[in-house]
Image (cartoon, rainbow, N blue to C red; front, top):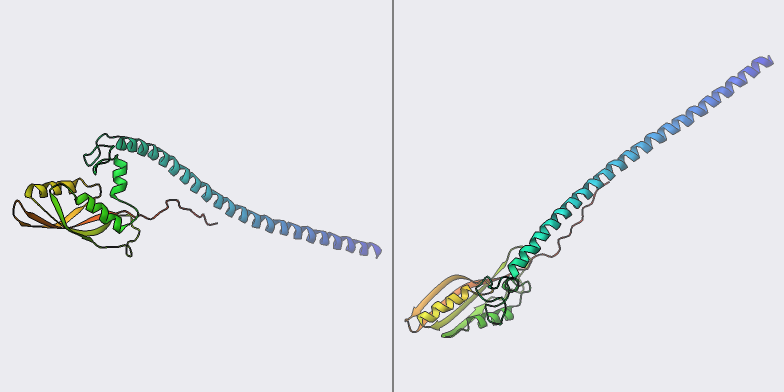
Length: 218
């Protein structure tokens, strides 16, 4: 009888150990599966991060190559002895200045209507021509940032001889600030000719900032 009881106790202990081992093994298996899933998700995330980094590095390398080409082209463009409007690269005349200065003056990024009118009046003041009127539309309240130049309407009237008016129109073509003549009305005689012109000039006010961030979602 005692042997039978001892045998049953040994079986019960063996079952208990087996259940314990099974519980531990089940826990370890579940833990391993959960850990593997987490590690797999982390691996996939890190792989996406590395891919995004490689793309960024590749773009930076290409940008550096383009930047070197742009710098060389800029130096060639700026160091021309005769600028793009036919004037000297140095001096104080209305057509002087290196090409970079001319481009910056041609498309100012800050809108200043009084300064614009003053520069136009200085441009229109040439020998043999009298300024009868000069007007424009102050768009300071409506100017917005844009990737394209913004047109500024202007209108003016000048009087002079036929030859002087021709010289005046030639001067407009050489203006640092681009001026598009939309319409022109001529009246008078060859010696006393009046040109009434509607036109537009431009400013360039682009949005600022070129750096962007890319978020890799886990």
